[in-house]
Image (cartoon, rainbow, N blue to C red; front, side, top):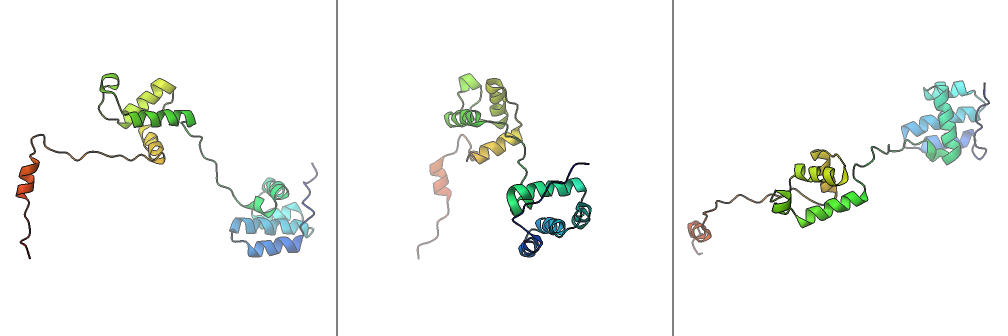
Length: 169
């Protein structure tokens, strides 16, 4: 059996309990109390029982505590999936949206998400769903705008004449 990973020497049981008392993070508090049991002379098994975890998890806590101190015992945010589009592809998308479609070349008079995703696949080899593309465009500052429909034979002067005006006061 391998020797346990030693704890840092710049903390002790009282310091860890004081940090646990002042912590607002319940997971960090539980981990600090488990490590304080090790500082007090308890076994790693006792610390695992206090923390409600296995021995491997206690070892991971010790390694994180040794590397980053008490802040290493706070759960970090998961990095998530890597973005589908890199910076160059986002820039190409921005240029494409700013220029707008050329009806002769693109076959459309306004961009749709399906058109943009198809162009990204053809030009850059990136397969991206319409929902993801919509999210990407929204983070780039673009919004879905559509023109208000208007009848082709609408007469603006007739509409102004039809409007009712309040009688003068």
